Length: 107
Image (cartoon, rainbow, N blue to C red; front, side, top):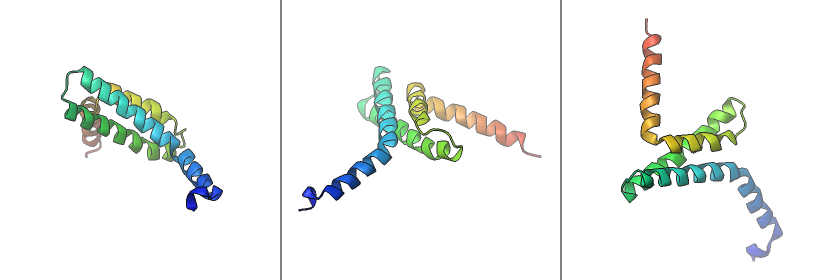
């Protein structure tokens, strides 16, 4: 039986240890986003979708942190900040910054 094979359990534990920062950061972002959206009086389905977006944005921070050589546990703080401020706030400020950056580099 494969369940009784100790090598399989070792592989499962190694996979969980590898993915633990992503699970922890996106889960925390999801919970904070859900609580914030529900606290603001949003409908449950809207709150769930916003919380999922917060978790996905947090997962998207991992490759960036890895690219710049930063500790991946910073994604927990980034995800908490995105969740606390909200996806709409994050989108508006990012769009403003990117439009200024694009207009600055035009000839």
